[in-house]
Length: 271
Image (tube, rainbow, N blue to C red; front, side, top):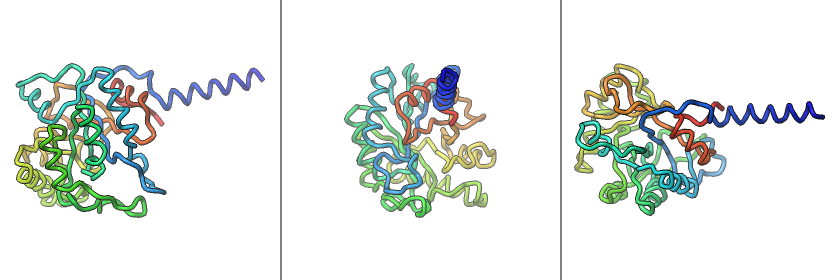
């Protein structure tokens, strides 16, 4: 019986250490959180981990406030990068990929309530439409934020925006000409619509972030910052010519212990 209990305790310890990587070394760098959908997933969705419920998102933002983190905009990291104004010591960049209507309905209003800052990467051709790149066998299409919503958020001082291509393709599957168009046109259209510089780009699916030809197109298009979908924290100050900025993917099934480990270790799990 004692051996059985010892084995159960050992198994628990092993599983705990695989699930929560508290034992990793602290990692320096700029923590960049990445969310997708803030809301309630449709029934039978196979993309549950792309959703975070509003109540959980609010608790995560409250955790940041309570533990001395300062949420920042793309324009804040741009000022630091240019040497114009240093970032606060415990800065965190909150990003949302794609530009869903629920980012406006839930995330924007929660951030506004808490006086926090967020940043949304927009897929230009789906503004005011639906996320047609999703396979409906995984989850029904959902609404994207309208231009009216985007302009309200932009004018509020709560949200800033970056580009996420025109149509959300896998850039590695396109011809060089189409890669260039997806990248450059998204910057051009967003700058025209929002009448402001769009300095940041995120690669759909993370595809191309670590491919020299694709990444060169992004930097040559005039984006100062490019963001991968690789899990981790990138050292700051950042070597722009060397690597994109990695991010910390916040999933539906994670809690504030996960958030703490993301922020401090650059990952919260092995499994």
